[in-house]
Image (cartoon, rainbow, N blue to C red; front, side):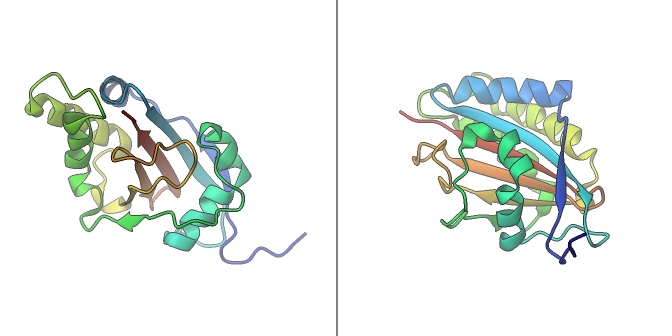
Length: 181
């Protein structure tokens, strides 16, 4: 059996669905009508340590994994990834994620914005974050990129990739968003 080094992780796709998340994603689709979103979650099923480390190199390895590529096939992830992915860790982790998600639908895409009041958008985002994190804020790291790092993105102002890393459960959730005018 080949020896596994400390960066090798085997990933398995995990279902990511909850009514509150679905309600938020419906609004995201309604505000990004010429683009859309992709979402997926993966669990590290075989990894050398007890904690999945996350930095730009590990995210690159994650997106290079065939199971992840298959799960996000619409992204058409280049093999190998050569361009900068543009991920930056969010200083407050998942504590401010609801504000980021609310902002994405309130500001909307090229032609559509959230039709209701901003307070409703914030409530949708709060419920979506609760569904994603179960309010275990200390267990999550959030990295965001606004770079069009695959051909799926339109490389205009509305490109976002959010990676939520659940350090306690060794899971990564990916949400990609794009739109065009």
